[in-house]
Length: 118
Image (cartoon, rainbow, N blue to C red):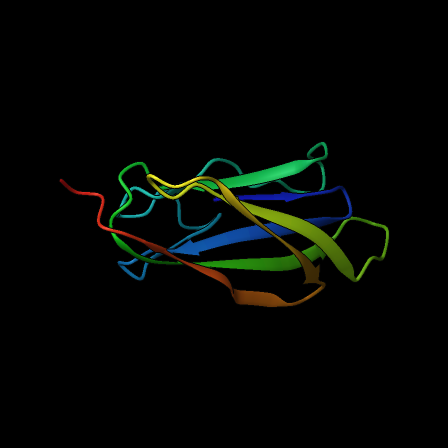
């Protein structure tokens, strides 16, 4: 799962897997090996991309959340973003959205990953 956003804000990506453990900047890697590649903050060049990967994704529901905790000096209250995800055996999918300052959207999208076993 990747979160792509511009220079206007510090957005944070959260993904909760079937084990109900959430991967985010303060909990990486998780017990199920989900991990955040890097926490992109206001000092990172744009476009900013945060990616959470599950190298051995298990079947089940994955819930994606986005937090907008910090404005990057321009006073914007609504910031566009794009989510892109790659479920095993499926074409990449995307979804555009708008993050609102000071708001944590804990359920932006839910993705059901099918049984990836033999």
